[in-house]
Length: 344
Ligand SMILES: Cc1ncc(C[n+]2csc(CCOP(=O)(O)OP(=O)(O)O)c2C)c(N)n1
Ligand SMILES: [Mg+2]
View 1 (spheres, rainbow, N blue to C red):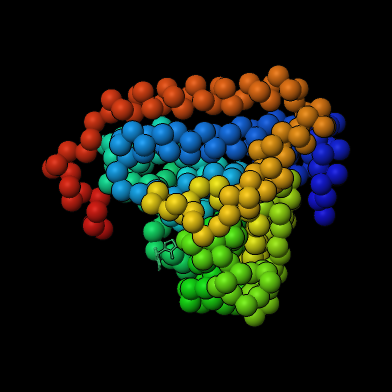
View 2: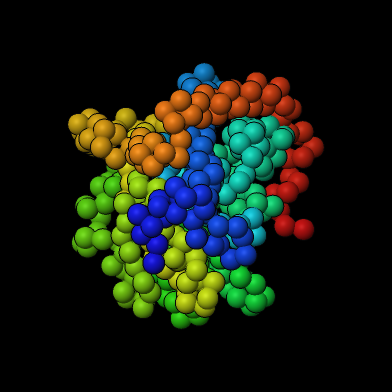
């Protein structure tokens, strides 16, 4: 059982006894790396916002500003060979799983150097080389895909695990229930990670389901379900770590409901007229995942104030440099219009 204090006490001493399969334990540096990842996600999203305003991004996009801890603390625990499936709100998951920021930026700007060679755009980031099986604009489509990937791992006898990300709204889809049923029946090594950001488009979660916690839905399928503070990085790490260990030891799936909040509108056309500005402010003032992680790092002497301040500056510089480079990258050739679109 990994508790908050236990992790941090060990962390202060140098290394934490958190072992993920055969990989090294969890160290101070791992925590710092997660903090950096959270800043990468935040600044990536802020950069996209600006590029969109400049008219450099076409179509729409779904930003995950405010949801950095759920992505970093879960996908950030996985090895390269483990898998994720993601949603329309995929940038955080992709960065946390190790997809190149430059390649994502190129994809979103429609460049040939993008993850999908500029043909997918924001909603379809995929990166199999880093275990990213793809994002999906169809709400709920990832559930059975993740179950299938987990079945592959099980049949091949590997210890790979799959994290399937979804929103709260997606758990009202039939595909969620079908996938949970089979995943449970076959003890598949999959973690259903629901980011409950309080809304599905403009509908509050409370207005779309008659239960208090989405994690309760696991009971129908004989799966362990847990609701956590998704803006508390350590809680996300500990819960996901336990679920990974369980999946690897044949214990089957876990449903994690991580409570969080998206600061932006659902997509670029959303004026957020369905919620109060005071509510948004309340979340930002009290539960911001980056501020809270910074406080933890400072309190436990893992980083100094100056070191904390340095991290976003370095990330900002890296992302700015990526923008400069990617702007000059070529667009896909017209002759490539149909390549990589259909299966061979
Ligand atoms: C099958 C399907 N139905 C409806 C939509 C339109 N749609 C896109 S995102 C979305 C809301 C999803 O809410 P949630 O699962 O909570 O994810 P969030 O956007 O909050 O991250 C809807 C209804 C869609 N893309 N696919
Ligand atoms: Mg939602």
